[in-house]
Amino acid sequence: MESGARKKKIWALVIVGFFALVSVLTYAYNDYYIYLSAYLWFGLIYGMCLQYGRFCFASAFRDLFAVGVPRMVVGIMTATLFFAIVSSFVTAAGFSTFHPSPSGIHSIIAGLIFGIGMVFAGGCASGSLYKAGEGSGLAMLVILSISVTQSSFADLGGFLNKLVPASWHASAMSKNLPAVINVGDGWLDQYLAGYVWNYPKVTFANLLGMKNETISGAFAGNLVVGVVLPALLMLIAVYFIWGRKGFVQEKLKEKGSVGLRDHLTGFWGMILLSKRTSIAGLFLGVACGLQMFVIEGLRIKFGVRNAGEILTRLGSDSGISIRGTVFDPGYWYVTTQEAQWVGWVMHKLGWNNMDNIFFGYINGIPNPALNPADWMSLALIGGAAVMALLNNEFRFKKPTLEFAKWAIIGGFLMGIGSRLGLGCNVGAFFVRASNGDVGGWLFGLGMIGGAYIGVKFFNWLTERKMAKELAGIEI
Amino acid sequence: MAVKVEKISEGVYALDCTGLVCPHPQIYTKKMIEKIKAGDTLVVTFDNPSSSETIAAMCLSKGNEIIEKKSDCGKYVYRIRKSA
Image 1 (cartoon, rainbow over the protein chains, first blue to last red):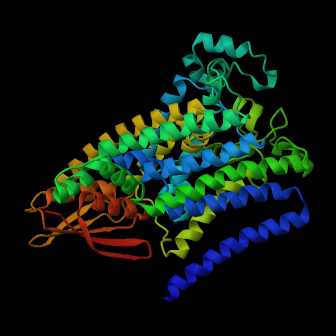
Image 2 (cartoon, each protein chain N blue to C red):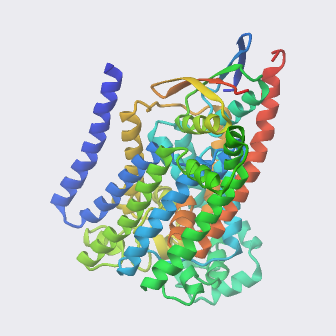
């Protein structure tokens, strides 16, 4: 083994050793830290899976539209399916931490904005985290752009208040939120309380007249109707539009005709086109479901409903929301904690950003060193670094000026899309769709539209650059 | 940092996507394969790990053969022969 590769493997061990040491020492200091460590280790698993499978939600439809490769759509549908299976067991057993969010046209619009952003940035919210773990300076810039945009957007009022429809303002004011939240000031506050909250929270089980926690609701409603059927329909559509062409041509050459059996073989071939991505999807999906089970188990053990209570017991009650809560999803999430760490810095610099719904009423801005979701994201970057180091793929790359501008623009659009859609490709699509929330698929539809627009633009741009490069070259 | 195209010899072209991120390496590779003749060879260099799976899958689905794959320290060189 070359000394460079050996050194990288040692660094991988150092990272895992560091996380292990953090877990052991903090647990020795106080039992409650195991709650944060649970987030940490799931984050590490997510990072390893994402890097191993090159698992980026942005590439799913982007690569399909741009180069006709369906591998990531397959990977994401695999992950969604396995997450949904585990999640159904967890929900039926009464251990689910998932709560559906309001579904409406806003989910599609938010997904569209987010989708354009993720193509421009070169990666989705979770993809940027794992690429940061591979040493990409550009991905770090994307994360910074998403974080700053969200954190600012959550609290901005002023001229943006003038863009708020009167009906939103009136509806927001009628919600009787605490005066300290000042719901009449701030675009996002009035969008949330005056518009989004008026939409119903609907799952596929609810649509079929079932309760989510029942066996019929969790399995027949949310798993079969809410995930298996749409995922299967999507994969069949992808096969017939993009996947079958090369396969059919090959079969026609071989035997002159193509039957249903051949199409089934071709469909399965598409599923296995990238085993690496499908395997990552499988492990990712199972881990996501298990995280809900573990976090809910710890909440029962400690007799808490939210990490805000744990932080208070640990003696750190600053940055906790007016309801005593902090962001504590109980499952994989990416963007809210990104907004929080910048929000925390801004708060320390003197910006009063606790007088809004996002920070002040729901998520808080706890110290990042004690924020469970931040532990998860940092460990995700670490997990991706471990996998990249083990495979000799880690390489620090400085962002170039040309791509830095796309990273900032893309990150900005993803930040806006995340707040409008109540989450990113993970929180607003992957988690919600896997748990039978109708809004998850609506956000996904928007992301597909956004990816299409982004690809059209980049196709035009690259064609121009290519033409310049090829001038004078005879082919 | 921009894409670089070079004709190495008759029927052999080099596409340097070093420094480019998703989706650029795969888009340029696809466009370049479309432009060269059947039987020609394209040598693609890139350092964006996630493009490696996509470029490999793209070649497989279109029947273009990757005749040589090299990767070291996050830098990849794929030699692709365009199918007839």
